Image (cartoon, rainbow over all chains, first blue to last red; front, top):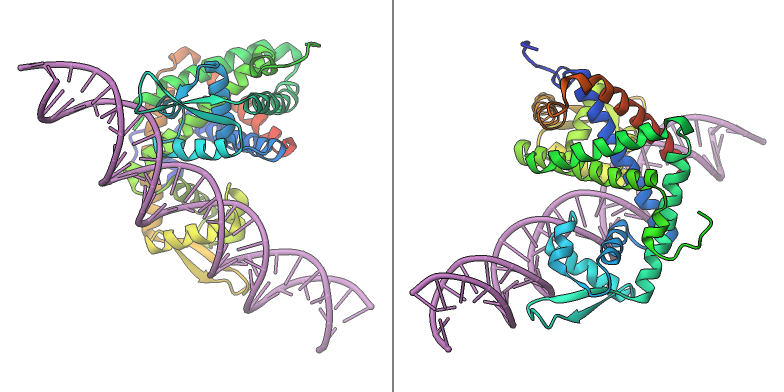
Length: 162
Length: 162
DNA sequence: GCGGAATATCTGACTGCTCAGATATCGTTG
DNA sequence: CAACGATATCTGAGCAGTCAGATATTCCGC
């Protein structure tokens, strides 16, 4: 490890680092493909799907754009434009916020809630069939633990990165 | 499980499916943040970084744009434009391909190879410090196995999805 | 209650991708 | 070897994001 690093391979260092790198690449690509599946089968982008889920979780009283942008990998400007499109599709509606007239409240429409359910069914079916079912039954508890541990590691690491 | 599904939460179904979903989200966001770190500290986009790695792995004789696009989540048109920019930055160069005059060969320049090493060092350092080191020493072998298993699952699932 | 900093949203300019179609070359088949 | 389909790359048009700055409103200290 005290050697001078001169090629990318050497810089990659030990096995665990390599494993993380390959693994993140695989997970990323998988997420991408899952997103494309939703786009093709449900007619909404994966970002729209995420917003639908966030709004569904939040319940009926609506949510500010700011709050949405904080949950997403999307700037406030991006949220404005995304909500514009979702509103045009009839998935959400903007209402005045009497408590703070700077902002507006975004709410799911009936159609939006229905679409969230439909897209989730597609998404879950994909995960179940292609990721969960291939795992031998006896190993599934292990996997669940692995996944939770890894999710936690990832979440903890994000704020420290840069 | 035989019940009618009417909300997104119900559609999400069992714990393992939920764990996969959350986990993919976390991994995705992590990859995003790692990519941004490379952009800020090395001055190249994460896609440029990936292309640098691919070319470094391929060795000195160069690679067709088509081959690059097959390795990436990028269409051939996107590769053309990405290589345009990388060429302008002096990271790669295009050479005529005597064996097939439809295409051209893309090769790393000296500067490109150096940048690949530098960016990899940043990337690896981030992974090591923020992902590997927080894992207790006694658990690292476990993690390496978990990661490889998960990478394999993900890779196997991708072609079946849609 | 007034003035200024903070906050929520929107918008213009720009970037970087995709898609579809144009162009050039290759390879095969009769 | 001529013709035709396949393949590699490039390009115009369009779309969806970022960033920075404009506007409207709120909050806070005096």
